[in-house]
Structures are given as C-alpha cells and as structure tokens.
Image (cartoon, rainbow, N blue to C red; front, side, top):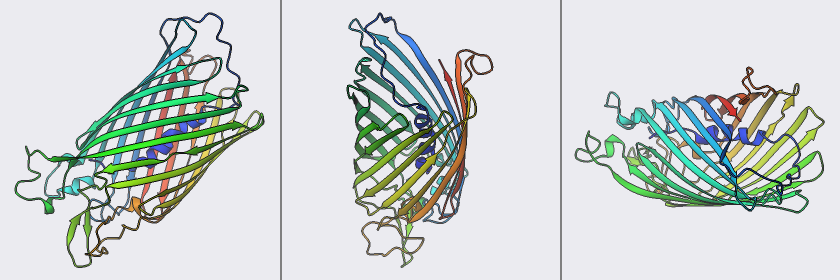
Length: 403
C-alpha cells in the first residue's frame, strides 16, 4: 500500500543498463566454430538501493501532510546461456526483487490505529526471460513472464521482445510488447467506510487494472564516435486507476475518495544520443516528450558524462530536468469543485518542475574487485531529487557484477 515515487527509483536504477555500453556497436563474432552446448552461468548481478523522501503534500490526506517514506530494494538477476545443435544461443535471465518500505503518509489511511497494515509492506517480484539469438546476425526474440505481490495488489505480466540488426550491424531495431494484469484491493479512508470496514479480519473487495504497452526503438551508428536512438513507447491502461485510499476535499467542505477515469492512454517519445569523445569521455544525452489523455504533458532532458580515469576506474556525473503540466483533474486541498466527475490531489499529477542529479563510481579491475576474479565490477551511485512542490528524496545504490 505504499505511495512511493517509482519514477525516481526506476529512472535511477535504469541508468545502470544505459551506462553499460561505452564503446560503439561492434560486429558480432563468428559463431560457426564450436560452441559448448552445456548450460553455463554468464553473469550474476546484485543491486541494493536505499531510498528516502520527505515532503508535505501527501495524497493520502488530501494533498497536505507528511510524505515521509523509506524503501530498501534488493534485486538479484542470474543470466545463463547455452548453444543448441544449430549454433543458436538460448539465454535465460531470472530476476528476483524484494522491496521493503515504511511510510508515515500511508499510515494515515486509518490514523486511529497504532500501526496499521499500511505503515510498512514488502513487495516481491520475480521474473524469467528466455531469448533465442543468432550471434552471426545479431537477430533475437524472446518471452518474459513476471509476477508481483504486496499487501494490496497482485500482478501477473507477460512480454515478447524482438531484435533485428542490419547486415553491417550499424542499425538495430528493437520491439517489445508487454501486458500486466493486476488486482487491486479496494481500501477506503477510514471516514468513508461503513460497518466494520477496515477492522481486523475483514476481507476487502478487489478491482482489476490492466496495462498494455509497446516499445519501438531504432538505433543507428552514425560514425565511430556518434550513436543515436529513437524510442516510441505507447501504452494503454484500463480498470481501477484511482487510488481509493487517497482523500479529496471540496470547496463545500465535503470529502470523497480519489476518482479518476478508468482508461488512460500514454505516449512517450524519446531521443537518445551518445558521443564518444576520445578514449576517456562519453557524452550521453536523452530527451523525452510525454503526453496522455488526462491532459498531462511533460518534457524531460538528461545528461550523463562518464569519465574514464584509468583502464578500470570511472566516474559519471548526471543531471535530469523535468517540466510537467498537470492533469485537468488535479486541485489542491479543499479546492475541488463539488460537481466534478473526476478529482485528485495527488501532486504526482500536478504541474511541477523537478531536478535529479548525482554521480556514479565504477570500478572494474582486470584481476577482479579486491583481487576476487569472479567479482567483475562494482558500481556505487548516489542521486538527489528535488521538485517545485517541496518533495525531496535521496537514493544510494550498489551494483555488484559476478562473471
């Protein structure tokens, strides 16, 4: 039941993957020679992150009150592969994530309790991906299955991914389809419950929320120093999209649970450009425009400059700026029109500006970290997030790669 700003956490952890490629795309090696057909471990990644935030615009209490929250996230992924009799590669990626959070704002769903179920929760989310690839051509396709659960929701996901490369390996097209079928537990603020709703032992009702998305990415090597990628990610959601334990207050003094349309269309369009400035510097830039049918419009720009200090040590300062025009359904505490059909006081959906900046340190010695050959890489990253509504957060994470 947490109210955590996943867009901060995900865009931060997503930088691990974006940072991995520091040289231009190279031609794949010839796999016509003998390849072992035994299943082997390619690599293991361990990522741990600690996140905390504070602010005074909690949606649980109608856009006012504490947003204090802390979250510890741990993820392990195990990548294995084997070649079949035809020399094609089958890769299996198993990922297991566990998050645990404590939230002062979520505990205000029923402030009369000393410590309700919403004060803390644990989310567990395993997934498994299988990808079949041709190492000679670089072409690949695969499927993913996933599951996620915590106190107030369960989610089942499935995905299909496809990669196609040009003959000269300079152009790459990636396509992905995803579907998530969720079941939300419908929990109301204590003031809006009837009978013994919310008391220990009561079974809450549930409502579905289904999400479908596609991703189209076209990457091009312009020259040995410059690469660019165009990304289009349309998505559609249907079902219970409002968070029913969030309160909304009206100009006539009345109180209702958050109510939003049961359909949402999203269209982010992104452009990523990487420039390799000699052997020591990489300039990574990203721009995204976002729009949806709730009236939200947003511009995001990001810059990261990895600096290679020596052959095995690098630092990477980064900065991201976001400007958002909020949904037409948003109003602050006590400002909603009593005749409105849809309403929210969730500042995630309001007009705002935000800054996110920090630095990463990457250590990958040829003889392994601390002399341990199997520990191939260690990366430590810190980020600070601040937005115009007063919310501020910090996140620090550690990534260990074993090969």
